[in-house]
Length: 283
Ligand code: AMP
Image (tube, rainbow, N blue to C red; front, side, top):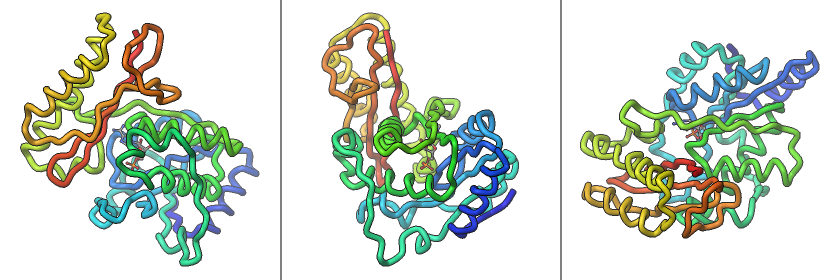
């Protein structure tokens, strides 16, 4: 496995790899890897010949009041995990190489970025699409793998790829969870013991909603208000949103129609930590 930090070196190796006829798969991450990331690396391996994992805590997707500085980092641990997964290249650039002092260009997907996460993090997706577009131009992949854990991000990236004609196939891997249901996240390390214990309510509330819909309940407000109660009963969470949206257009839904994929997503805060999770349901 090779560690590359230079953009030019990465581009040259990507060209060489393509010229040899190999299919490149990229897995963009912010590091502090966990089983969720590793599952995406495995999916990339199954669908390509040469896997690049990028590790870059991207400043432009954090607002000034967010946790960019505190975001957990451990490159050596990440490298060992990538090595064990037989990743071919880890691309881990310096911030100054990705964003020089003259940086002026951003990629912005409109409309679907202004709801859900975008409502609470207005500059977040602009940072995500900008860095992903850059990483695509640097790693030159045939396929790129993202996680369903960040469902809106997956939709936004697919839209960018379609609208800007990136010749890249986007694969989405399922959310990997701890045994008690909590979605794995690099940010889970911030959780104090009682917060970690109570965080299982998020997935439980999503599963409750799923069961209600599969049993024929169509009144979304009713389901939502029970979910709210379940979460607030724990006393340690505030809710940013619980939302039911069309899984493709992200249109808000008030009725659960059969044969329609519904994205049920939520974001909550406890202490200094913000957690998101989602589930896709179709009756
Ligand atoms: P991050 O390092 O948090 O930016 O995530 C990098 C990629 O891993 C994104 O495509 C995420 O959606 C994905 N990811 C994060 N957590 C999980 C998880 N628990 N299961 C599957 N994919 C995940």
